[in-house]
Image (tube, rainbow, N blue to C red; front, side):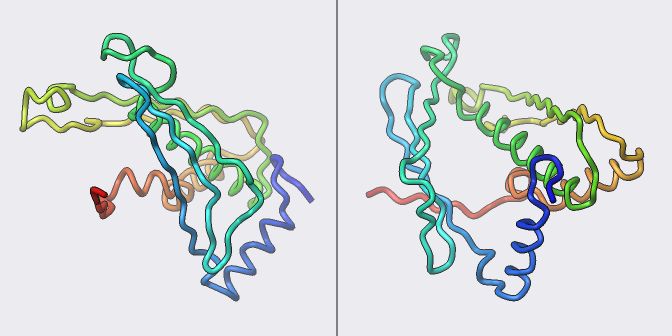
Length: 181
């Protein structure tokens, strides 16, 4: 059976496998970024790895080109890093909504996630050490069409917000270790 393009059988099998073998839930995701020139970088996103097993379903890495807009001295050949953060959040929320709606038997006709964020470049440009260098705030707007009731949609969105890995990374500090090799 399938809802919203999600195999309910596979979803249930994954949940059951993780329930009986909790170590299956641990993954390591990897990427490598090489600066190209100016504001442009190229990131290769590798296959992710489960505990004790390498996922070999992806033989070639995904390549993401990032750049800065011309106003920030770039050539605008790709999204910049803070735009990629917004895209990652929108993607994670979309997947969470689609999968969890499917698990609840909610059919989605359309789903659009619009995200915007505001930041002040004073810190990035070295002009202030009191202004936060990251987003001051992020606004998420959903457009969702479904036969579900408003209460079902509200419950779904509340659940997705509690379980979204990217939203969690944004809302809560994550230890980051920087090593120069």
